[in-house]
Every structure is written in C-alpha cells, then in structure tokens.
Image (cartoon, rainbow, N blue to C red; front, top):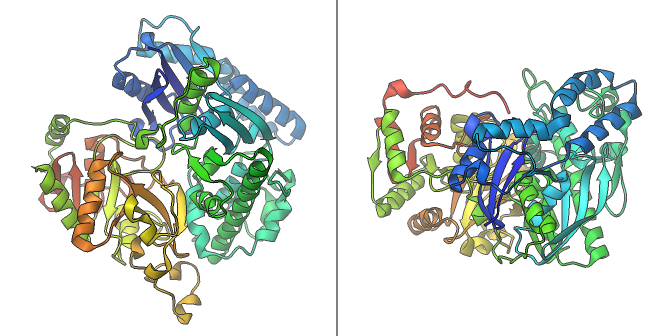
Length: 611
C-alpha cells in the first residue's frame, strides 16, 4: 500500500490530505484546529489528524508533497520588483528577509517541521513539490466523475500562473495554456473586495452576496482596468493597481476613476455605491468566465468541464456557465481554494508522476467532502460532561423527529453530525439550520446568531429528488457551488412600489414560499442532499418535509462571523452558548439553551476579529 501526504501552507488556508493507494482517506484545514480563520501557518494539527485517521506514523508515509514550487514563486517576486522598480522597494524590503531566511529553503523548513511529528522520520528524500495550478487542476479532475475533461483554474496567483486551461484524460493531466501574473481575475476581484471595505482572501463571497442589491453601472469603468478578448483572455492595466509592488490592492488612480476612496469598514457604512460596484465586478467576472468556457469548449471539443482555484468558489458565475449549456457536464472541486491544493498535489503525484491507473467513480471521489474529524457518541458525551453541558440522549427516531419539530417551530439549531467537511462550505456535518418558510429567519440568523451583515444570503439544503420542483436547475449540486433561480410558481412577485426600493430596503420583502433562502434577485445557492452521502441530514429534511410539505431547510456554517467552522463538541458548545441558537443537536444528544448553566454563556460578538 502506498501512502501520500499532501500539504498546502504559508499563504492562506493551510491544509493536509492523506491518500492510500490513490483513495482519499482524510483532509482538513488547519484553521479548524487553531481557531484562526484562513490560518496560513504550517498545518501541524491537520497533519496530526490525517495521520491519526489513517492509522499511520509520519515515518511510514511513502511520499510527502507540497502544493507549489517556492523557487518559481521567488523568481516571480524578484522579476516583478525589477520590472516595477523603484516603485516596489517598500514591499520588496518587507518580503525579502522572510524569503531568504525561510521560504526559499522550504524543503529544509518542511523537513524540520515534519520531524516534530515523528522522531523516526529521518530523511527529506521523500519530499516533492507540485506546481500550484497543476495542484488546483488535479484536485478538480482526478476526483471528478469524468474520464476526460477540460479543466479551468483561476485564482489570485500561484508561482506565475493566475488562470490555466488543462486537459485531463484517464490518469493524465496536462496544462495547455496559462495567463501570467500580474494579469489575474482573482486579484481583480480581490481589488474590489478591498475597495468595498472587505478583507482580501476572506471577504470575496461577501462581494458576491452584495452584488444583487446593486446595478452594474460601473461595468464600462471596470473595462478601462481590464482588456478582455473574445476568447476570455485578459490583461490588467497596472497603472490602477498596487498589488504587484505595494502594500494595498488599489491606488489613487483607481480611486479617482470610481470617484471614492476605499471604504473604511470601521466607520463607513455600505451604501448603494458599494452595491453597484459589487454588481459591476460580478458581471465582468461572469463575462470573463463564460467567454473562457466557450473558447475552450470550441477549441478542444470536450463535453465535460472541471473547475478549481479560488474563482471557482464564485457560485454565481458557476451557475451562469451551467445555464449557458456550454458543456454537457460541470464538476467543481468543493475545496476549490488553496486548501484543496494539498489534495491536488497528492493526486498529481499518484496519477501523473507514478502513472497509476485511474478508475472513475460516477458520483465522484470526494465522499460528499466529509473528510474531516468525527467523534464517537462516547467521546461526545465525555466532552459535553467535562464542560458542564446539560444534555439529553435520545434514540435515532426521536433525534430526527424532535429536531424537525424544532425547525418547524422556527427554532435555530446547531447541527453537529458525522465527519467535518473539507472546504469552505458546511454541508450538513457542521451546520446551523432553520426553517426556510420564515420571513424572519434570514435576518435573525444573520444578526442574532452569526453576528454578521444582514444582507448575507443563506443556502437551501434540498432533497435531491425534489430539486426541479423548486429551482430552475436539473443537475446535482452537492457542494453548494451552483446558484440557480427559484421556479416561477414558487415566486411572490414584487409590487410596483417594492420594485422602486433600493439596496438593503429590498431585504425584507417576502419574495417566495421560502423567503429565508431566496436572495433579492430570486436566486439561491443550492445544496442537493442524498441518502448515500449524508443519511442523517437526508432523514432530517425528509421528516421536515413530512411535517410541513417543504423539502428544504436553511443551511449555514456552524460558526459566527470571523470564526472558522466548529471542529469539536467543545467548539460547538461554545458557539451555541455565545449566540442565540435555541438547540444544539450533537451525535445522539439534544441540548436545550434554556436548560444550560447561565455561567457558561460566552461573549461571542467580540471573540473573533472581523472577516
């Protein structure tokens, strides 16, 4: 049996993954263990977890592979600073000491870190390095349900590449085309994330959620920043940006073009201007992704598309690609960002370098993305007792029945079951659940439970068999990476008066039979649920449907703003006691907020920094 440990680290979303004979055994992000969102540090805890789950010591691992090549990255930094000299000297002076001391000699750095896991690990001869975008592409193609596919990756930047096209067939994968730094769709989107006052590499999904409140009136101005060709390739005018050489994303020329300085999140509210900016950059992003998809379909005439890289988490753009019917089938890696690079690097080594045979799983090889930690009932009870929690243990029927009853009475539920999800989305393993029929649920969950902006939409988890009755989409969406519109017969049309409303005023209008999961543009980010990947979650939604006639529940990640998704029963209890959740359902235990010791209440509003 061959075992491979994949690692991604040192930029953001560090993670580790374990393969045994090419099969994905375990994968997790470091942030879940350290409780630091997007933690970029060496993933010590994630590695410990995957080794323990695979019942292996580090010295028993055959190969260790890192998700990118530090020397190429260093070359890009040096060449960029030379090309933009003398403008970049300040950031050059800040970056170089760390590179020269640590990052350039990453093999040595990794070896010294790895030795801490196992004193019998004695040689660095089994450490390998993958290419950043090859890691992304491999994470998308090899677990996909396709023998052959075009693979499109787009993110901020790897070593040099920011966007790539690769062709995957059987156990081969080859990058055919690249767009290079500083021309980057990911960095363009991040520039607008920064400009609207959100955190880069964290708040991009807020920008996407804000877009439907605005109108794309700045589209033409954005096209002064970026020259888009018919085939979707593009070049960015660096006169407007500061990311190549400076310590911010944009500059005064950028601010003058749009007429305002970047929003300060500490003391400036989101206005219609920011909503219109969000709508405009979202529209341009969708246009580029659709043009790229059309061009590669025409050139290679392959019917399947795989997507990865941070831009592939833009589920609105993904939904548009699907709706355009450019490809017959689309599959997106659920851990599309850098965390998934750990998985892709390991798969690239197994299939491309070692030429192992690939057997395609027609569902996919991600096991529903439930690849993280899990706890036995005994471990859950022991942990809950040790922290002073008051819980009731019930049988399975009662668990499902009572939880569905709570939901139908508009209670907010913390749901902690089975293995933790790999990737940024909670998929019914570590989720907060609610009743989608409630017109108060979205606002209440945002303000009283998540402590975040009221405009943020929630996702519907729907029984796969009921999908087409509710939404204008006919394909499976198990990873919440596709957006589609609600069916017209479920809509509540706006009055002429309501149509005149601007921005956030649109939020409180009931626009469908499931208002809590219907965004202001009648769209929803959908998760389809099947019995074979998550039977407990499927049973819960089925019981809720039996009671209410509605096969949907609200699903959002089990955390508050700025906190990583909960990992342990203690994390779950802390979040439960720090928010206005009504019940916590963990394993076979039900916890009622009213029955908890008041002294265990947490102040969660200020516990985590803004994301």
